[in-house]
Image 1 (tube, rainbow, N blue to C red):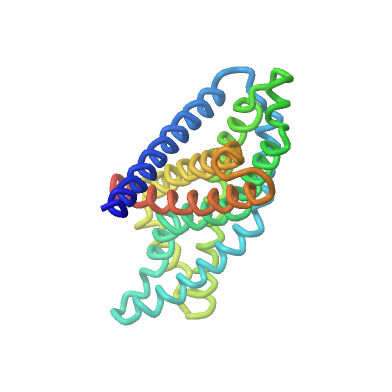
Image 2: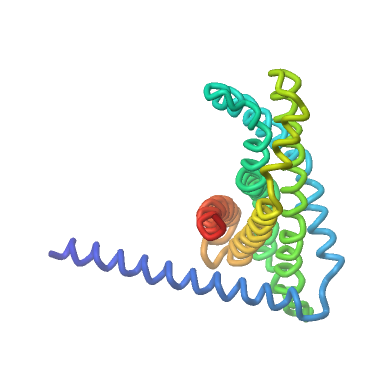
Length: 263
């Protein structure tokens, strides 16, 4: 009986703690959005974070986009050719990249490259009391650290996704047209016929929301290092790991809900 009650108590404590953290994350996001629009806005910090999140992620985005498009070219051609429909390779590659793979893979790559670094940087600032020092100097941490990251994520992710899509379509072109013999006119002609502006907008909406998720979760985990994960190097390590895992899962979950809503 005692073991049963202890088990129930642990479940209840875990549930209450999860609800508390969800509320804390929600308030954190609201404060972050508030300081995105309330002046003075730290444009220098925003530009710095756009450079870090966006420009410095270009190499991984280019490589991932190219090979994702090439894989789609191979798989799409051999799947469609079974039904004599290899002429639809262009639309298949374009729609898959623009609506799904482009936003999702770009977000996952940025999470691993930039999101982890943001969480670690803010986490180190927390355990070394630099965030407390900002408060003492009259600098609001939300205005100085959180809001610039959120805005930079919202600006960078659609641009990175667009680059991913273009490079991926080029990768599909290399395989489908140059290697497997699909007509380039058919490849791009059918793509332009079947890919509509609504599909492009869906990809933009997703990439915007993914940018918010990455910045929100990674700054949150870093900001509350020590409080939620313990102090020291181990606390920063846990916060960084949790930031990457939580962001990745939320990206995939949110992608499902957005796809369901926009389908």
